[in-house]
Length: 169
Image (cartoon, rainbow, N blue to C red; front, top):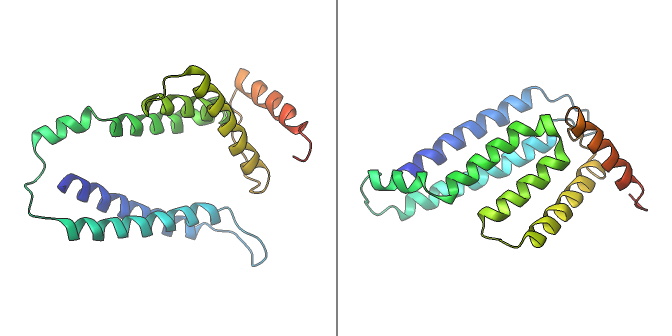
């Protein structure tokens, strides 16, 4: 419980800092959304949810002992840590190999982590979700997605041209 509390407080402080920092670099006008709009919206939601979670956590606190060595060992063996590592690796490789392959790989690997073992289901849902995310980001949101370098850039450009052939997109 104490480890969760500390983690959430640190995350809340970091989120508030990022919210304020991003607000200082916003270059929007009164008629258009700036580059800081979407990150600040997501951070605002995250701050609100963290605050609610902290209040609920403090309400339910029932005098339990601080974190034990066993709890720390269990954390390092947990799916939570593996999921956090998958997200961190995804963030690191995104600029290098681009959005399409990174998103697909992330969804497949996370599906395996969550227990899905059928390769066909992993591949189809990973490809479908990647396509839907790509269409949403490139279409209505007009957000530039990284294409990667070398072979991955060529792959992204070819995939974008195939997706562009779909009527109505």
